[in-house]
Structure formats: C-alpha cells, structure tokens
Length: 103
Image (cartoon, rainbow, N blue to C red; front, top):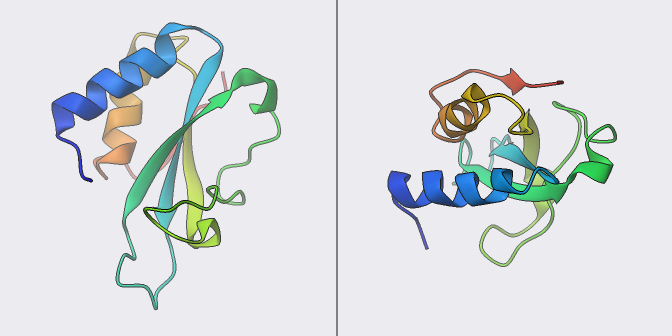
C-alpha cells in the first residue's frame, strides 16, 4: 500500500524521535525489474549504523517488494540535525541524488 507524503513524513518523524533509530532509504537498481527506480525506507537500530554502507548494502527481503538484493542503500539518516528529516524525505521521493549522512 502506497502512503501519502504527509503519512511518510509522520512515519519518518516517529522513527527519528527516539534517537536510537536511523532511516535507510533504498532504491531498486534492477534494470530488468518493472519496479526499477522504486524507493523504500526502513528503520534500523543505531547499533548497526557503522556497518551499513551506502551503495553496497541491500534492503531486507519483504512481502511488498520481494527480494531485497534489488534495492541498494542510497541514504542514511540519523535525525541528529533538524535538516535530517527533510533530507530523508527528499531522498525517499527522489528529490535528492544521494544522501550519505555520516554524522
């Protein structure tokens, strides 16, 4: 089920509010997939922040999008700065090319 931009912003805000969660934005890079270019977002515990590498790591497998290997991590967002929410939303909606936030 697709969500509205407002619903996505609220979900991202909830994820970043606890200071122990970061958002990973992934994009489907499988040129043979009808969903090529589709973006997904997942929340993760900060304990794996340093292990996640933009451009190398894949999304988890999911019932709504299938195999996670098609989706490459294109952005990491912690919520440490007020602009992080806006940057995560821009990355999710394709309004920003890449967003490797490493702070």
